Amino acid sequence: MFTAVRSGHLAAVLGLVDLLGIPRGTKAFRTGITHMSLNLTVVILFAINFAVRAGQDYEKASVFGFVLSLIGLALLGASGWLGGKLAYRYGVRVADEQTQREGFTGR
Image 1: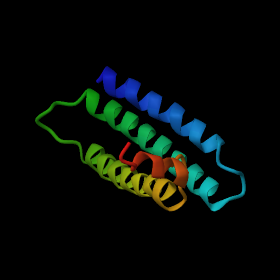
Image 2: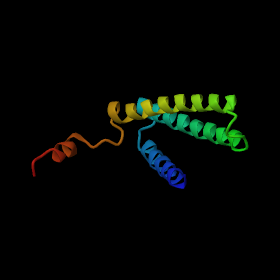
Image 3: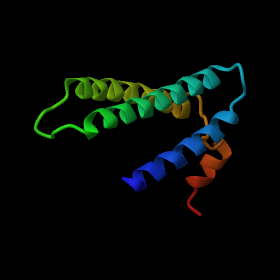
Image 4: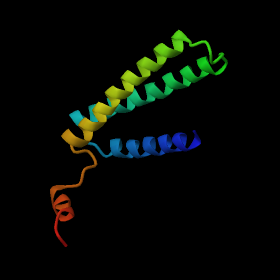
């Protein structure tokens, strides 16, 4: 679990660095803010979910915890889609064409 938490922190820091490199007032920046907000919401939802389920008996499933999981997963999916849009449509943190071309040469 601690490795996943550390990886999440690293991804958040690098994502913030990427976000700060996007010009303000652009579609890409607004998409990045939405992506970040959804990710923070997901973290909060799963922290609440953990707290709700932590003291429960494993044989009794919590309906509230299950609903929180479904909402969190739906938001995470939407955030992932926005992250893909940032990279593949807007080219955020993607190498320029010359650098990409150099990666496909035979040398």
